[in-house]
Amino acid sequence: MKAAVYLGKEQLPVQEIAVPSLEDGEVLLKVGACNVCGTDRRTYRNGDKKIQPPRVLGHEFCGTVVESRSGADANVKVGDRVVQYIVLPCGECRYCKMGRSNLCLSRTTMAYHYDGAFAPYVRVPAPYVRNGSLFRVENDLPDDQMGLAEPLGCVINAHASRLNIGLEDTVAIIGAGPIGVMHAVVSRLQGAQRVWMLDVSQQRLDRASGFDVDGVVRVAQDGSHLEKMQDLTGGLGADVVIVACSVASAQADALEIAGKAARIEFFGGLPKSNPSATLNTNHLHYKECVVTGSYSEKMSDFQAAQALLQSGRFPADKIVTHHLPLERIEEAFPLMETGEALKVCIRPGD
Ligand SMILES: [Zn+2]
Ligand SMILES: [Zn+2]
Image (cartoon, rainbow, N blue to C red; front, side, top):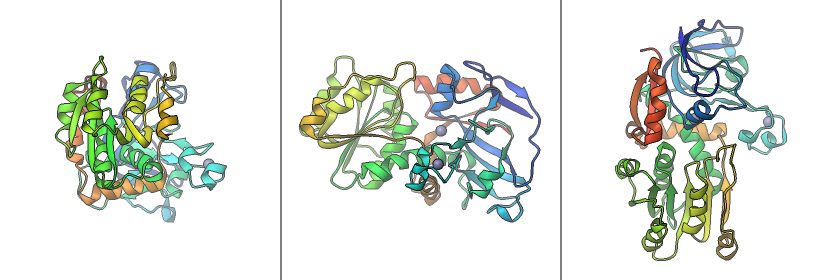
């Protein structure tokens, strides 16, 4: 079969590799769709020390069980359409025991430690199957839209545990890519009064306007976006500010835009080569803000994401904007970088 194999920085050739053969306890999926994540783009551009090449990338997928050697262990059977919670936590460490399994000290992850789904078939190792990481899709939402369960679960992890957005809150989101848009939708579902999105790209803002947001603001060199946010919030600042991009100046802006008693979420990490931001921490002092981050997702977040997608109340169809055959996977990265695409879907079977 043909697979997109990560060999190192800027090297993602589509190569012929063997269809995985199964050991006892394992399941084979035929991949219907696998969406390209921002982390795939980052790995492609910068490399990732956690990924030992050669490795088939692709972790936002939906597929059909075509073979199973899992017997009674599995909660899915041949013919089922499934999505996968891609993290396998150890279940034993301090963070697993405290219910924060996404922070597990020895977790493994599909497409990092095992081959992922930028290939026609993906093998689900036995420990994942035993852990109940495969979830049957219960409606006819297409594979590309169900592939959003993984990133949406990460968004829900940020909201569910820490942001606690409700009817009293105004929300500003910096970064109008797919993650920012998902944050906007979830903020609204949580009950947010007002939701604004900010970005440097007018193209991304124009698309974001098509979602249920109160307004969009272009981030400008001269800092005029900060004044605009003060105007929009009646001089108070936002109650919740979410940074959905990997940009240090956006993290600094978040503290400026935040109102008193605000919660601030740094969703995206900064490049590992330059992970420092210069922040005016007096904002934290005088405004009593809380800054938090979030990483990955727990199984409960993934389940909530799947349920939300299946409810039909999530505009998944507007988030997957582009489709490419596997052979053209490298074209996804510029589409994401220019803001032309929100989510790019790869259909490895095409
Ligand atoms: Zn992802
Ligand atoms: Zn653990």
